[in-house]
Image (cartoon, rainbow, N blue to C red; front, side, top):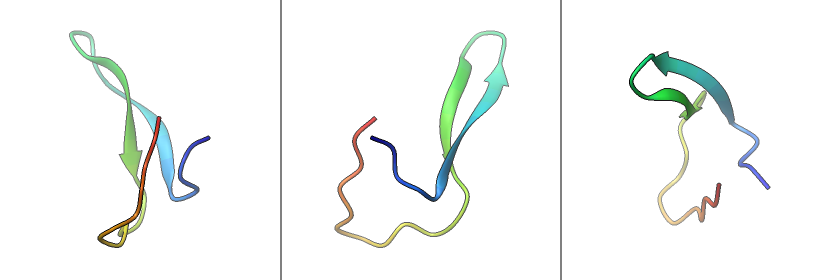
Length: 33
């Protein structure tokens, strides 16, 4: 399960892909990737 306001985005050749927030995620929100 992934938080609905996030997306998988290419960061760099060293890092590869990462999960990036598209909108503000409120404090206390549990995110699990």
